[in-house]
Length: 329
Image 1 (cartoon, rainbow, N blue to C red):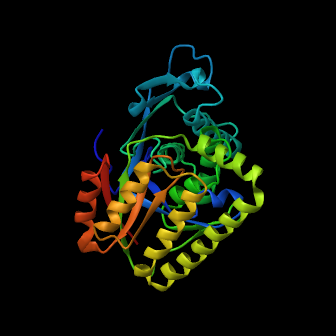
Image 2: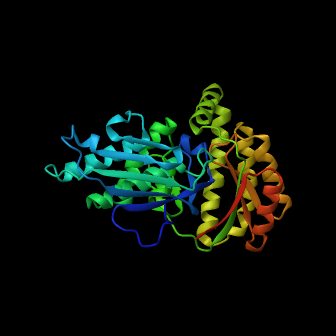
Image 3: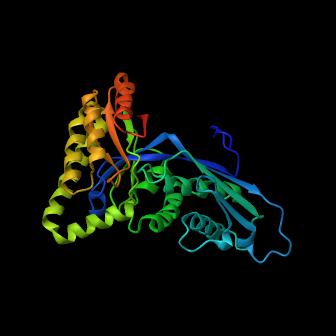
């Protein structure tokens, strides 16, 4: 598939990946979190109109989903109720049909591709579903707000993660940094000054649903201890948000180190993540921490722009499957 251009045609859409800056896990328990889009990796969705099938047995039989990275191609009618891609299509179609009850779209194929590694904490599932919803909305002539896209994708996140915080669908649907508290309206914002991150991928995949569930069991066993850790993480998030708003992003480094230590305390880091965090700091990063569910996936490092290449090289030399440099702005 051709690379995504800046001018998307109707029926085509893209969505960036994301990383959590601060607040993972604690966000599930009412604390704030900060997340930012990562434009260097994307999911893309393209709608192609198909010829009507002879004597179609219903709209869902005339709709195809092709997930290229999963090497799957199937009719919507064949998809289970637990299929996130199918849920994204069905929910968007339901919104369209509620707005225009007599309308029926032409048969179509939804073709999806992504450069976002699966299961690495970069929001691949939410990004693919966001791209699908936006592409289908454009194809149907359905104007969807960021909030409406986010709400649809949140339903697909439930199928992927069980009890998601809602942060992935929010930051990806709004495509800008977001201050997020579960159950409250998200606060998209622009940074007062850009800053540079290096993202290091351990190459290990641990389903977020499993890690979140294990933390839940630990919290239920020791609610006072874990509640205090989550509150401490929340305080770090609030401090980080204030620094980003004031443009003092070079002061985020110590907060990242503190956040990582607290995530280690609740048991969601692993030796591979800890090694990459340590190597990033040795190579000149101002701060570093795991990002996302943990037990694998990615870590992030705050770096001076001139040190980005060296930190990325150090991560790859010490076990990172890949290292990605992104500017947050």
